[in-house]
Length: 152
Image (cartoon, rainbow, N blue to C red; front, side, top):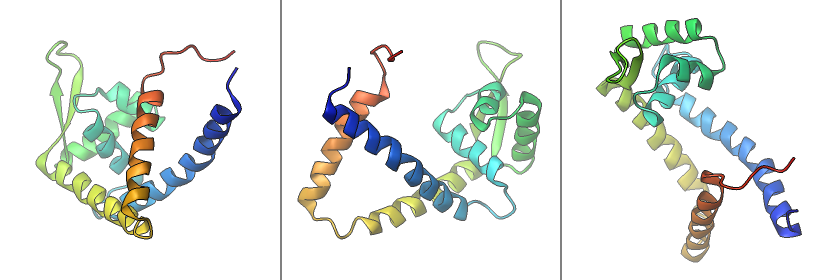
């Protein structure tokens, strides 16, 4: 059974992270290339994080059917943002990779978003930021690789 402190931390994470993610997504979308829909830009961001992912993996991430993800891939390939290559281990599987233009578009959005959030952190002094970074390191270690069984 989780301790009171564990429960309080988990409650704060569950309460705060969705709002932060909405703000991060909004800032990222604000820098998306002109004419690129939100799902298409999300596909680019996913491919940056998961280079070589399959169309099926992209579909799962976007919450759409594989044929819908295939259409998105075709549009991004035609726009010059994405490459769809035969996967080395399975030629029938397609591996998705950003092109230079796709990587630039995602990098521009990331830089913008980081700058916005860095600006919001200006009121904090270096000691506070160092403590926050340490806490993030600990959270990453604790949450990134769930090794403990989930509660029933």
